[in-house]
Image (cartoon, rainbow over all chains, first blue to last red):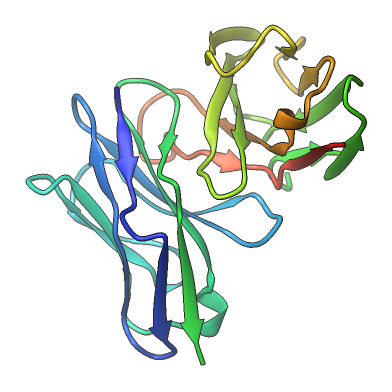
Length: 112
Length: 117
């Protein structure tokens, strides 16, 4: 069975500071990893994915994530946070099947 | 193509009533998924179609739930005899089977928020 853990329910960061949203996963086989963002009462918007290749993945809106196989982590990062980045962030994993398994989400609040 | 479309956006229904939701995926996507998201949780997989064939159903999908994709294009999710516990956001996603970077891209709709009163 595959699973995802997002250990922080909420992350607060000051505008302009770097942000990190943590994600660890557990799968059998090679993982495909994803980050999505959700704004209130909206669906999920794709940010980035890791399939294979470079461990550092760059995505939408200046976000990036680093795949670390030994630590089974896929943390989301951004060098300089914007107030508009405030939202709910979900990490997801797919391995050997077609369904995505999501974490519980991390609420990011960027403080002006 | 404007992405994955879901209708209605919101549905309020009385307990015991039947409801039906519709999802129109990206036209060239042959895979379609339904997920359910409750407050404070991540989306949970419900069911999956490849073309018109329903290939997997989660144990979360009780007998009161049924999904169809009759022509391999749009899909419907019906809930019969709704219960308060069915209140959630129902999300539809689509993707394209195969290999390569463009594959494994799941596009989600904006969801249908169901409230059972």
